[in-house]
Image (cartoon, rainbow, N blue to C red):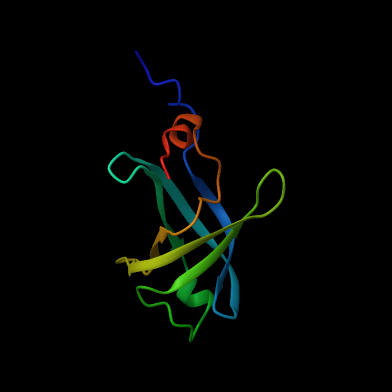
Length: 114
């Protein structure tokens, strides 16, 4: 039997407003996540493409917090993430520090324990 959620999109892929400190830029992001049964939380992470080119001279080292805002059906949706690394292509990988800026599946949010 197939999963009833197989056809549903998971996460978000598209433009996002990104703020690091006082610097702002629009860049392409790819975000996704899943419920982690060990921590009892929904965990999300993603990739920010072209961030260094969009924010030249800005500290984008691992541990730097970034504020993301993505478009949503009811208006902009904010989130906070932390840079974890830079991949081979120069994209910045992030781990979510707040609720994700995209809808989650009902079974993921119902399982969340804290």
